[in-house]
Length: 111
Image (cartoon, rainbow, N blue to C red; front, side):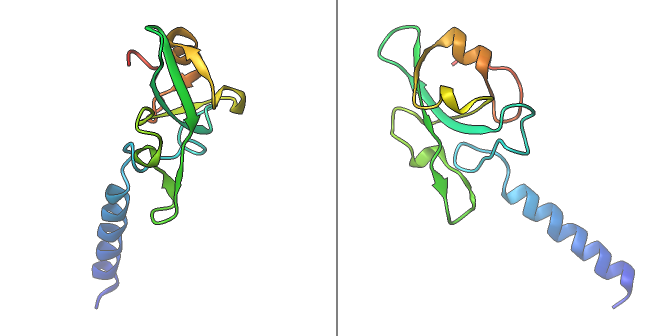
């Protein structure tokens, strides 16, 4: 095979591999993906009207990524935080929006 053909095939495999691991609730990470928000967590609505429950995101060994679908059923939304102290907490929605980010790095707009 010509070197150019091999190079084209390698690029296709790399692109397909990255697409297969797009960030979703069952396959995400924060450390190298979300600036200043390296802590992975899962969030759900709290008991109060303006509260959210947060927990550590479970690690999925099969895909080597965090997976909120393996978390408590009440905490299925993935989110990234700047400080470990906020994990395992019940917070107001306002504090959650201020201290946490979406898994794509954007600010949290609504639950």
